[in-house]
Amino acid sequence: MVCASIGNGPAELSEFDPAECRNKYYLNGLAAKMEALLSNPKKALEQSTDLYRLARDNTAEGREKLTSVVSEVFLERYSSLSPSEQEMMFDILFHLVQDVEMSLRQLVSEKLAKLDGVPRELAFFLANDEVPVAIPMLSESRSLLDQDLVKIIHSRGIEHQLAVAKRPILSEGVSDALVEEGDEGVICSLLLNKNAKISSTTIEYLAEESKRITAYQGPIINREELDPELAKRMFTWVSMTLKQHIIDNFEMDSEFIDEVIENAVIEELASRHNGAAEGAEIKLARELDNEGQLSTDTMILALQQGEVRLFIAMFQKYANVPSGTIMEMLSDNEGIGLAAACRSADLGKSVTASIFACSRKALSSSEQGLRRDLRKLLGIYDRISPEAAARIAGRWREHVDYRRAIRELELT
Image (tube, rainbow, N blue to C red; front, side, top):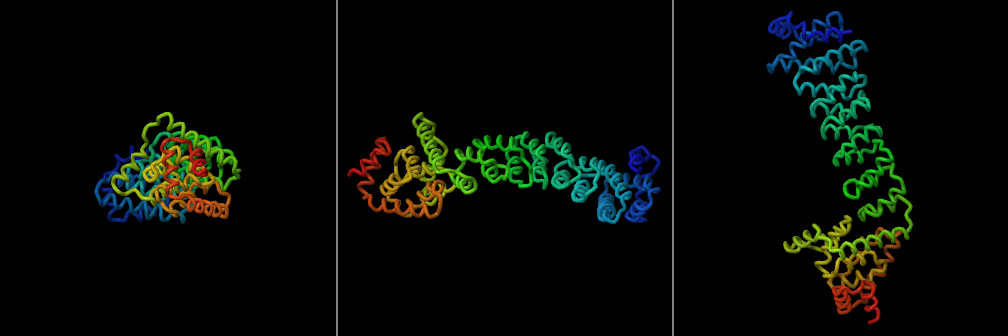
């Protein structure tokens, strides 16, 4: 085997004169000599030793010549080589890449990443190299085993992990290793990789993590492995848009949905009652208002994107009613409170209908149902006079119960 002989290559370099070696092959054509190497195994040791010498040539001419040989002779001719010649080529490359600069190692990695039959040791050496060298092998090479990938995941940095997360084939074991490292960007890339296999245990763990890391929610909801029961649990904490996705793709009864909304309202009211600190959403709404950038379009967009707290903070700037009252408006099937608040703030029918549609979309079973509810809402809006709307909004500011204030409106 050439590999055994090459292993002693560096020790035998003292028998040759470096300058004489370079001159000889610059004059005679190194590429031609290397082609002879591949077709004549008996000359392998001599020619590969010359190649080692060239690898140590730091001149621009030497680096250019070496790159040309590796690219044109070794890699471009790969498909035409016999199995024994391919084996010889890999033996030489394995020892060569340990001595050359990164640009050439990167070239070798890019070429070998797409080839079958690359020796595992060579593939691992390149995959465990610096980022530019490692990425091609980590992203594509089929020569790496799961245990190789796991070792690199646990020993190298985020860039190496990201490359692994995007591989066209990923086992559950490798996916688990990526999740164990805990980088949010890497985990998002893994979840977005439809070809990655992720165990049910890991999906469940990440679903729980998505309560605090919202970036996980969308990718998890779109995973084929998502269990319907887990989707039902996630419904209680994901955004409005993702709630609708769950409703569209999983069986969800309306009673459960109503219960979730009611519980959310109760929790929100409790947090306000307990004196929760002013949130970033309130500060943002105030800043937008002070700078003249607060608009109904921005407010509706926040609700469409599931940013309910931000919507509430913005709506307060228009209607000047308590946040808990607004939460109850959003979960009120009839829309009387919303119509009254919008009427008191003179927001108009279009804005009122848009807010209602966003809040009702997750609760309506069909477009037909939503249209019916919208017609009822606009009828309510027309029947409430501006004076009556102002009175009910005033009662809410006095912290009168949401539904009691509505009943007072109905009695007048």
